[in-house]
Amino acid sequence: MFENLTDKFERAFKVLKGQGQITEINVAETLKEVRRALLDADVNFNTAKQFTNTVKEKALGRDVLNAVSPGQLMIKICHEELVELMGGNESEINLKGNPSVILMSGLQGSGKTTFSGKLGSYLKNKKGKNVLLVACDVYRPAAIDQLHVLGEQLGIEVYSNREEKNPVAISKAAIQYAKSKSFNVVIIDTAGRLAVDEQMMNEIAQVKEAVQPNETLFVVDSMTGQDAVNTAKAFNDRINFDGVVLTKLDGDTRGGAALSIKEIVNKPIKFVGTGEKMDALDIFYPSRMADRILGMGDVVSLVERAQEQFDEEEARKLQKKIMKDQFDFNDFLAQLQQIKKMGNVKDLMGMIPGMGKAMKDVDVPDDAFKGVEAIILSMTPKERANPGLLNNPRKARIAKGSGTTLQDVNKLMKQFEDMRKMMKMMSNPRNMMGMMNKMKGMGGMPGM
Figure 1 (cartoon, rainbow, N blue to C red):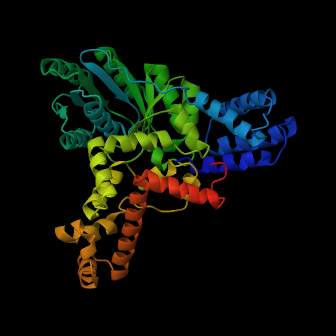
Figure 2: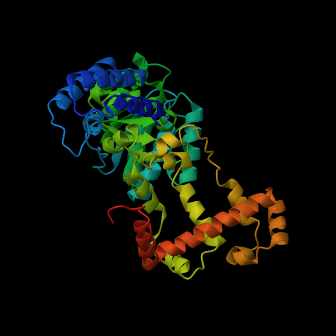
Figure 3: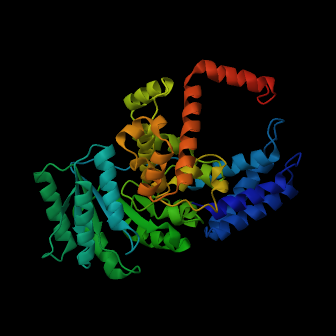
């Protein structure tokens, strides 16, 4: 995500590296690179120009503290302005009303139907809402089928009427149905077109007028860059939507849409889609996105994802097993499953400060743990619970059963034993203090 933009920002800040003070000359040189980086990312020209002018004004007006280098100060100012450019603070979705009505709009292929399913899942599982999905794309039977398939997967009811060709009538009937069945959120998936046209605009405007939604969201494919911003402006001029949803952000290495859209349409980005899975949906936090663009990672989001998957009671049980040196392959497999639920491994690594650049050219497939899981699942229950039983004949059988080699099994065994020793050491405060004191004596941790 935003890899190209991150690289170019890093190159721009190198101009100030080693400089003793901020001057008009080195600021101008740095911001020339920043402006070029923004334009290469397909950011609107006027937005890029305004951004660099504001940063220049603030940079030349600040004194550099002794503890802060000019490069660090410039990064801080750019971070502040990126956050402001993308909206300042996160924007909550409006769920007032009974039922709350959420209307989807956007071009065909932008991901409206998929996002409708993701939003329904998010509201059901994280907000405790009783959600009804409504299929109002009367031109594409496949869109109705797709919504029904998603609804079945997510355990969410879908309202549709294949005989009715008027989306206004379908949406009004769906709201009446929702009231009669005590649904408290209705998500209406409307038709899209391959381009903005008058018929499309009239139709979405009529649906909005008929249902008076609490929230109208514009769904846009972030990979289309500046075209996404232009389309958003055309929709906003006509239907005055409440917020933007950027889909396919995991495949967008430029970031132009995310950086331009708020400035152009003056509407907040509310959600971002970061993958194909139904849980690959994040609230848009401008500050966290700015962190990632500037190569600082996103530890807060990483911790939140971990908190969603890890149960406190299970964590306490696991800690007791570690302290008693009883951590086994069943526990290891359970931890792998929880990490997989957190999302794409490469995306998770990119949230760790400094790791984004290291992972740039590394291809981490979605099934990165497949080989490890195959080895563990080829063990008997007794072997998983007692790793010490694994002698060479057993390892050979496991390698054959998992489609791997004996070397692969031995490598996993060594990694598992090293991890188990480290976890046991870290779980004991005395060991941790002893290790720190030892490192202090070696000069490895100055100042402790």
